[in-house]
Amino acid sequence: MIKTLSTYKELCSVVADIVEHTLTLPKPKLVLPTGSTPISLYKELVNRDLDWSTTTTFNLDEYVINPNHPQSYNSFMKKHLFDRVNIYPDNYHFPFRPTEAYEDKIKEIDLCILGIGTNGHIAFNEPGSTIDSRTRVVDLSEQTIRDNSRFFPTIDDVPKQAITMGLGTIMESKKIVLMANGEHKLNILNVAMNGEVTEDVPASILQNHKNVKVYYSD
Ligand code: PGA
Image (cartoon, rainbow, N blue to C red):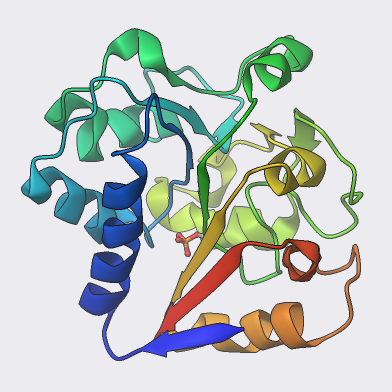
């Protein structure tokens, strides 16, 4: 189930090919991730100079934070992708409250791209998230707060809550691609893809999806 690629560059190039193909569909709908892993994917997509004018996107998650904060996922996406391609600002979306209203917009997703946390989370569905969970406000786990503290001046500045798409929401995507980069992800990736499907390892639910690709580079 896990396809290993020789470099991070190749990982991003393979996933960029999948995105490029998806953008040729009529009115494509994508779900997009943030974090360190997709940074070069977005760079590659910008370099390919693709037409995003009919594309609609939904981000997987967002901190409970001012959207203009430099570490918000809104700022991240503008910096790495949205301000650099011809997507219409009305066509990209970030989780908002009421979360049910965001959930209602997420229909008929052609492609959902995911990362994986070292604790097995996908989006901010932390261990214990239910398999049928929907978009909601969540408390971040201590592990995630520690992992993400590298982006903030101190660990106390890391938001404690986020809004995330649910596992049930993600699983309704027609196609899912999970990207993992670095040896620190290998163990959890193996547990998630080859172990039992359990709410303790949220990414393991992907084993139940009919059209999922998992790419890893070390
Ligand atoms: P990362 O985060 O790409 O920064 O490793 C992935 C995740 O936590 O989903």
